[in-house]
Length: 221
Image (spheres, helix red, strand yellow):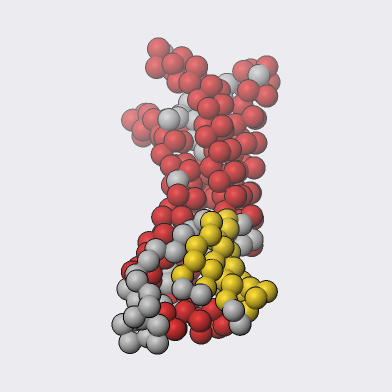
């Protein structure tokens, strides 16, 4: 039983003595509050768009918009797919099917890992947070992968295949392909996930500041 308690303490870290909690409650509440806020922001980002592509064409001077949420596409998808057909690009809905299917479950899992740091008072808290910290980079990396895959593998039988060289559509900013021009923008959902990552890093700083003295004290005992 004693060995099991030691193993649990190695992962969960030392408990906060009641006297110390009453004396320095703010010290231990700050990292927990920051982590709770980060988890909340990341979860809520599910309901907001992460990325938007606006396509301008001669027949659509007002532009067509494709908005990407973590689990779905919205906007003028059919119209954009119709235009992309002329240059030999696959329909947008065929990209990242697995990622969109698993995205909500994955984000909920990340949220639970972040919440776990409230109960873990050891350096193990860092390992719980690493996936959430790098989640925005994963999203952008995956987006770039699919944009590159679709842009570099155009259908040679498309009507404008001879006029278009393979290309990589940007994940941010403007580009021009034949008579089409596009503007890619990051949306509020992505910025929320980035904000959550920043809060997690700040929370880990205060987490270490709060619990490292307990670890040192526990080790000396």
